[in-house]
Length: 101
Image (cartoon, rainbow, N blue to C red):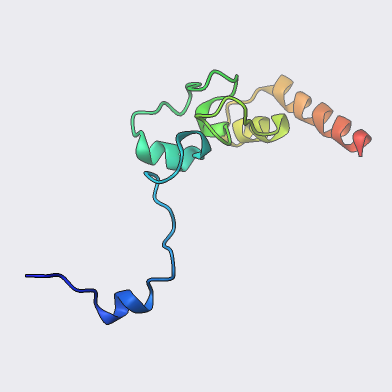
């Protein structure tokens, strides 16, 4: 028996579905894609050894890509892990960023 394409499949053959995590290159995955492909990936670890924890890293498997330092600290603040020194550091970094502009 030969399988044939349905009319619906032919109609939508030009549209490409979103890439699954298996089609995305390892270094280009964001946290949610990497966690889906590698379920045992530790969110508080540092897989690419770039100094950022995996769940706060924009590309947790690519050591050359990192989030802005302020964004990472704000993420830790949302988790309730940041102390008063960290909060002061956020304010200082935001002031420096404003001065550069």
